[in-house]
Image (cartoon, rainbow, N blue to C red; front, top):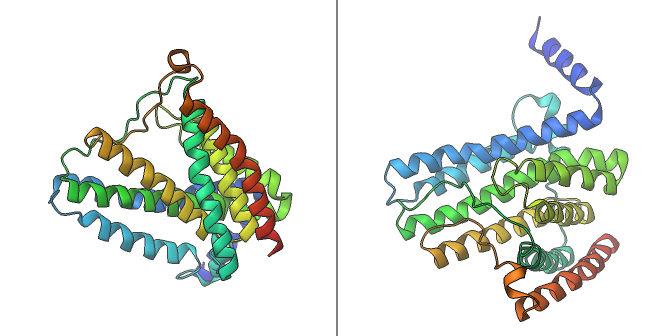
Amino acid sequence: MTAVASDSRILSFWYRLPLVVRSLVSGLVVFEVLQFGWVGAMIANTKVLPQVPWNVAAGLLFLWLVFKYFNGRGWPASTAEARRVSMRSGRLSREKWLWSFAYCGLVVVLIAAIINVVYRFIEVPASDMMDLSMFPWWTLYPTLIMLSINAGVSEEAGFRGYMQGEMERRYGPVTAIAFTSIVFWLAHLNHPSGMARVVMLIAYGVALGALTWAVQTIWPAIIAHSLTDALSFVTIAADTGQKWFMRKPPPFAETGIDTPFVVYSLLLVLTIPAGIAILKRLRAT
């Protein structure tokens, strides 16, 4: 059997699968490959020359090469166009970029508000993230930034790119965003805090999914995702001596309706209509 005939049979079988299955499988594969390729370099860096953040250069090179492949470069040529369309990495006009940056700021505020309001009423287990205390600060902080970039690229390419895009075209944005956001949350259940963070993770998925639908490219969502993670990881590392799990606010039973609770509740209420207004502007631009 020739290589061309083999490729044809594989593609024929693939396109006979239900669209939901294809979207789910392709999105998870892209997410896993992009995300865990760098993790190996980061783990190796904890044992080899931890004084030098060489995992950052290795991670950026890996992301660039693999992202290009999933974006349509390389073999086989028969799937190049499908990969390019699925990645959704098109360009934006200057005006759309400006509105997208405003929306990214709202996403950061939204996540901070959810953490400081919702987490007061639920028990959030400590994270099981790897201990990076063996890194000096000049290796730790670049590594945390790289972790944020890696999460932003891998999760947006997998979930909002490959998984959401084709479902969006077939079933519409509401179904596609809802499905992708739930799978996005389920993908985080490997962490002890995953179940408790259901509200935050689904809201995060919906916000980024809506942004990608509005602009039809994953780049603004990658920026919002990377920025939110970087602020979380770096701030917590600076506050707690290289412990970078998500810090929980004090329980509502202890604080009652204090000033931070009122402020974050107002922010939570106000960011939603503001975000919707920006999405409408992006769709109309």
